[in-house]
Image 1: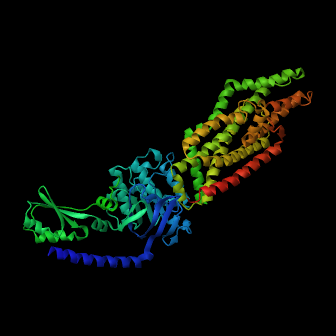
Image 2: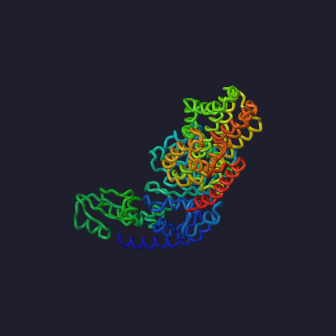
Length: 332
Length: 306
């Protein structure tokens, strides 16, 4: 009975995915970013190897990969800083390479390393950066008003940027990226090197931008937990896309949910878990449920509730996704 | 245009807010001043007195105050000449630091045009140099004026500021090309050390260029900064030398002033040929134009997307 259910659900899921793909095609015109066959070569070295993807307006998009995977190179191309070798990119229907000035007005970027001036105060840094977008002092002041309280900007307003803590600097970096009211915000590993408290503050604000301001967020990171809430994740390895899905989809595809069933081994119990990949260790069965069939666990447990009393469910993580995709753990 | 002015302002305040950097950019000038107070003034005064002693008919005709004033004004030209080299270079190292720290990426991702980025760095360097040298000149003239008559008309003073501006814009243009070769701020810092040490000699702040061999004089005078310093010397000391000549009353047929001018290099000598004031101005203008064109070509390639 269990095995039949598994097959049935698999078929249903395949149909849902097909429908989703068709829907995605229809929504092409709503894309904040459309990337086709993007490539970047540095002499013989290929940093980005013909990647294609789309980011929908208002979406939280995550680019996952190790250092050197090509994440920053991709962001720098999308932000008009680096020239693409090949490929087609559209940012809000503006073509990269032809309408760069228009693209620059629509994007904000938080770089991996701080790029503001250490000797200048927060105020001076933000006012000079605001001027790059043609904003007057008055306009900049107006734009900064909402940040003053939310980001506790008042207390650090006249302090030198170099005298700020890591978290405070990151906050100012984000505000700087938002000065031109970008429609898409690129965040290149924004929390690297930050303490947990500062990371939380940064993430709270990114959440606010996503939910309240409906801003499209393009994140690159090598922290697995940061992509948990993303709408769409791409895993990049050696300049190539190795996976493209939602975090749940990736987990379903590339990880297993494990049921640890604490009981003695017997032929009757072996029969119960027969159609799943399973093993027995010390005092428990390890039953690997295919990720996309995690619903099976509840079915399985409810059907066998008399037999299975002591158990534990372990969900697959994004670390497992990366491990299964690349054969390496992040940071290895 | 606001983006361009904002970036220029940023480049200026990044330099001026770094007090250490400003002090170090004036280090050669400070050394010239210290050496002057220690012994250079004595050397300059001795040189003039030697010329006077060689012609007994001149004894008592030039006052000690005028000789002091001459030495003081020679010092001012030395301070300004070296500062017009070191200040723009130090200000332009912002370009190197920006590239090193990827600050240029932040600028490149904004609507500021590539040519505006280049021009903003150039203008910031030139402006900082004009500002600092203008302050030095103003303070120096005020201090020296308290010690006696400078024999400078308002037009002379205005033209001196003009020469400071010319020296600043030309040196900045030359250094714009030079800083492109430095990938790290430590490399540009090391070069700055050499530049600081050499600049005082090249412009003749420590020893008048005339004391060097003809070949060395030619090498020194190839640099526009040397010729700018010579222009400053002519402008700042012209009135005083005229007054000295009047004091002598023509009995030496202008020999004294000619000797002084030769000793303290009032003309740029290139391959045994003395350049006239007009020729020096033309030379500096040509170097400036060539540097600006080269800067435009080189930087447009450099800031083009890679």
